Image 1: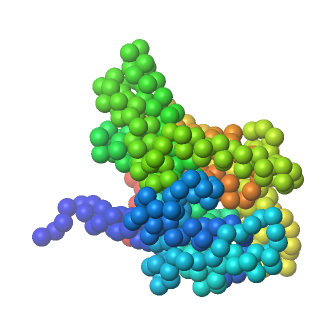
Image 2: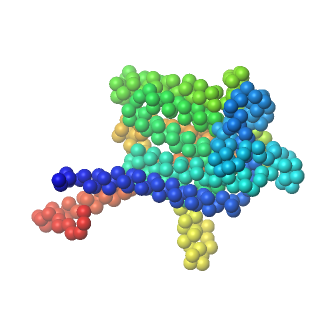
Image 3: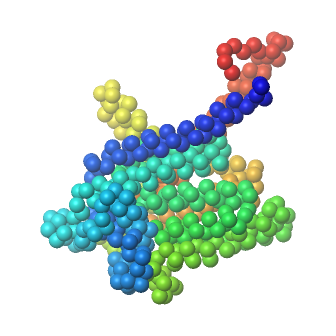
Length: 441
């Protein structure tokens, strides 16, 4: 039986959707693991490895680990759970090093037992390397859901080779887990906007809560998401958006703070005795730490969001740029040593324009609009709240740049194909004869 026209093409395309993310995962994982033994050690790594015991201590949620003490409220616990799980899966235990004291030097901390064992450090870094590679795959599916396979491939590839992504992906920190959850949140927002359902809304709220259990900021994002739902109801009354869809989508967005808060508290036994008071303690302590870091390292202090934007530009254009580093590597092969201006942010700006155009076409109730809003809210929150220019704080912005650059590449590709098709039709029309194609289709 001869299959209908297009069947073999559809099958090839479906296989491509499986092959590309697999290749992206392997590329990212290989690059991250390659740097695991050589990446410069950072004392913060010892803190995440020190708290690896949080994972098994979940079985004793009212035990001493979860009492009101500095380490327990110093950072939300999800990154520590990941470290514990990663160590256990690689045959290590979760009884690791002591607490690093930043008031003293490396030698003092080494003698006091705060330096982690090499085997634990490598195991924890490998765990993070896998998380970083999974994030690249999620970025592929975000780009594909927004505009197409080219956007997903370009975005995933840019993130996989980005020097900051590789650097943090080869350290034992929680920032890679944060951007994985942000990427999953954006992907869920796309699908919720496409087809509103309680299950997708529940997943979105859970992801926002889990994001808060890594770095707090995604928890706050649930409030603007709810306000977006309220805005849709108001716009629907004025007939400015699809009324039927807005009335289905808006209630699902309005409940996001509740779902996120329940998830956040449930994941963090420290909060159980007094959820509101202890959550306030968390935010107050985090604010104090940011202010303390700005005082201790004035050279990286950020006075206002405008300065924060300038720091982002400088770091992601000159210090850590995928396109700039690639160009420098090419020049180095010809014996030329030169700093190259990276175009990552330029591609992202083009991606913002393309995404805005898609939002206008698809409407404010679309998955594209909701995803753009979530991503913009997360990045705006980081820039507004960033008080110090530490390299790892820029990683969520790198995630956004990768997604937006992918959208830009897809748009440019579509314009080139459209132009080529137009020229082809013009040639065909001028001769009065159809174009004859040779070769395989």
